[in-house]
View (tube, each protein chain N blue to C red):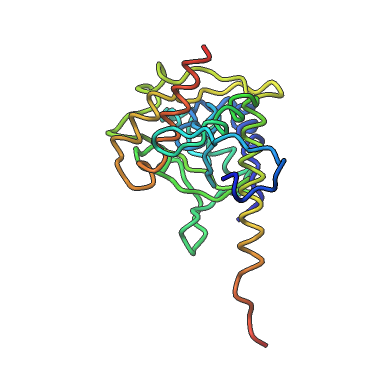
Length: 162
Length: 62
């Protein structure tokens, strides 16, 4: 596994005008939840132009399928699909998700992913805590359920501060 | 608790846990950081875990 450089990864995507939304545990972390994660999950817009820009960044970052011993590289057809592409890159593990939950796409999530200023001029759309909690509840896997108490407590504290 | 502490040692505050055992102090600390700093915390943790895993990988026998 390469040294994790998630901020740099986001910078590369943003610099190449890739349209994406940060989801998963990293979204929780960016919104203030003290969770541990070892990858960056994002939902990308599945238009031909955006997938082409995303693929260019993935090629720069030497992305390969991390569970495939052939070190297969993602192609446009993979990224146009609603499925999940679990990749290893030079900046750490990156999951490019065509959809999440019950088939929610980039467009479906857009209204629930306000832009967040991350630093060094980087602004990225990050899913909000209520939507992340909803997705984790629907997913219902043990790892999702385990994160829920921390996410709910973070949401409560965030609301208390606002 | 006072039985185990030496005479004049201050008594630590009770931890601030919610009904699920979530440490609310950790949440407040994270919320006090900027998003970039939060991401750095995760990068450092992920690196530490990777380093420890590497150190404990079975080594080839010569």
